[in-house]
Amino acid sequence: MKLTFKTQDDHADVTFNQLLGINNAGEIAGYFGNGQTRPNKGYVLKPPYAQADYTNENFIGSTQTQVTGVNNHGVTVGFWVDGTGDNYGFVKDGSQWITAIDPHAPAPTATAPVMEQFLGINDHNIAVGFYADAKGHDHGFTYDVKTGSFDAVSIKGFSQSTAAAINNKGEIAGFVSNGGNDDGFIKNGNKIELLTGPTGAVSVQALGINNEGEVVGSYEDKTKATFGFLYNEHTGQYTTISDPNTPVNAGPATMTVINGLNDKGQLVGFYLDSGGITEGLIATLSAHK
Image 1 (cartoon, rainbow, N blue to C red):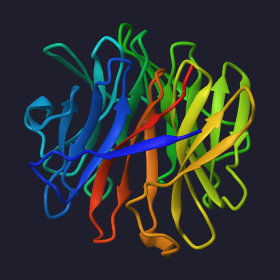
Image 2: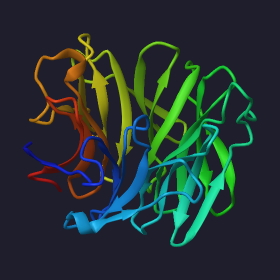
Image 3: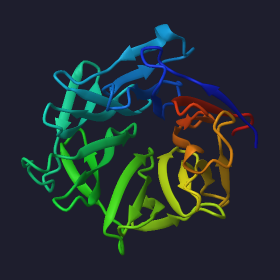
């Protein structure tokens, strides 16, 4: 399996970009800005990926916005932050913005703001994400845009869960924790498959899933280096992914994260370059069914 890599950054901020989702038309969800010295600003990027192909997408009145997913109808999801630091998930369908809070999420307080994020959406307009409870524990959910209903995504034996992506079959990819390292998961109805990563993986997060039985994400090794991965549900095989522009054997300075993929062999994410800059990446599989 051969991958070709392309660095892809919005020139509005060439110091920090993350690409988080991609649909079958090659439309990409992402954002620029590190959230500290420069606020997060969301965008949607369309082929052929020139600077003129970026469209800003920021929730009205927000201080920060990340666009995290896009389905094959162009519906996007993400989250926005208000002036007090509360995080709210959103769905954008055409010109309509929808924001909703899981009824199980705690009300904000002066010391504990709302923390809820939408991270992915399928073509049936079922979104996934998580909220944090009063103790800071994350709880995954699905959100039906049509009915406005939330359903919990929990994994028996784990105190925390994050639902990161959902495909058109209803399979959910995400990760779980009991307060230590993470394990990835695929949830298909009541069937759960835990993803512990390739040899050497210490902590694993599944972040994207397509309709072809493929999952992407990232894992951390014992040196705190982070690598992307591609996992094939049918074969159980992992492929480690590392952008050629990230440092090698540099511990935490070695970082590649793969956030999303489509059915056509295109993967998106980000990497840390030798200067410490977070760069968006598009990786393409040379041969794909």
